[in-house]
Amino acid sequence: MSDTPPVSLVCCDLMGAVAFDDSVVEKAFTEAIATQGIVPGTAAYARSMVQIDRARGCPPADVMHRVFSDDAARAQAAHLAFERSYRAMVDRFGIMAAPGAHDAVASLAAAGVRVCVITGFSRSVSRLVLDKIGLQWRVDLTLCQDDVPRGCPWPDLVLAAVIRLGIGDVRDVAVVGDTENVILCGRRAGAGITVGLCTGARTADRLRQAGATHLLDTIADLPALLAPASSEPAAHIDPSTGNSQTPGQQGVSAA
Image (cartoon, rainbow, N blue to C red; front, top):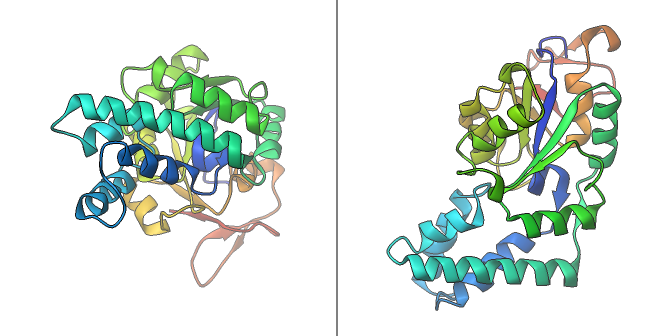
């Protein structure tokens, strides 16, 4: 799209942007809090799941500290249980790359754009996921919760990627995710583009309110969004929305 600024680096959230696990994260959270006596069918469970939903995109350790805000020991125990449960579920049920993720990364690399995967997972869990989906060695950098003081919604992951990859201006960064907390991370870091993916439970309105500059149906549409205007077909203006759309392009809109 011609209205997008130049991009040198794309920071993609691991879960929801480049990987898809069919609710394994939610199931692992359910098992983890059950080890602390919070089980389905109780009021405590309902309250906890609301907190977990609001914290999507945040590090699991931070999520558990929200759920068990009055007991650090229980929070730590629940986080350790989450990690065990998630690894076991991935081994049992598997995990897959998000549709179009491999091609999107390859297209960005061919265009000279660096790609960093960011995640609130620990290093061991993030490596497991990337190995399972085959992207471990196809991106320029992976940053996890172990690499920064704070995870999303704080800006640390994006700023660390800028520093490590030698990007001259954070405004040349695009941040991509399907949760409000990842979008907020990009906005707080000063990224020029924040792309909300309408692939999960988050609606377009919620992503837009969090600060998404653009909305996409899938990461497969990302290279077309970031392509230089000179390499794209002439844009068509949809009279019903006022948004520009290149011929054949699906699911791309300015937020």
